[in-house]
Length: 260
Image (tube, rainbow, N blue to C red; front, side):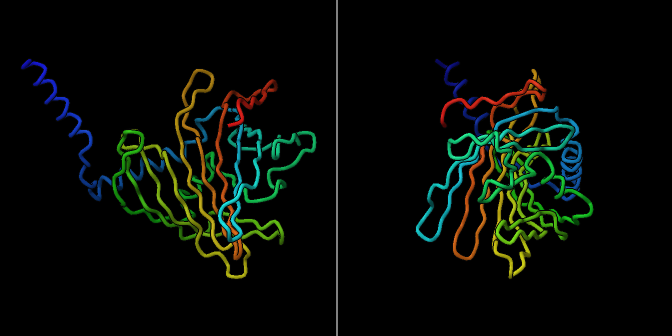
């Protein structure tokens, strides 16, 4: 009885210790952590294998009466020699694979760069990004450094399909990096400095990573993203999921699983 009671006390103490927020890192520690995160980001795509996955995009649109379903797009996403490419397979449950549609031809809002180039742009020296300590946050039962950032130079491109005009803008947001691995597990970014005469008035991306097994090894890869943009009279919201990661090869195929 006494042993059980002591065990219960110890468990309670351990649980308390695990949930106690660490003190903010010192300025020196912040600089060291930021340098380690930067190295991981710069080497990220170099450590990835060639692979294929299925990207499912659920699209929503709000024209002033609340969010409404705007269809689903299924694509095969190939990552080969550190570059991503897309093949549109289905639009609204209708096969379009033989039409050879490009990623930017399906209509609505789209996004690319989730597989490294977006983070790479934030940490590139030419972006002149400033970083500041924000807070600690628990993500998947692990403490994460949360750093705010702001780029001084344009790093993100927004394209308007109607006018076929593209603008390049700076961004700001937050990165969530695991305290133990210094790998970025989450990213939130918002666009700044969009020209007043450009149709798109706002754009943001929330991106979440997790470890995925490919060929018997585990790699940190995008799990889901949330892309939002707004115009003067309507808003767009894409919920993107990345599934069925497997090695790239001439025999690669895509499986869809259930409708969810």
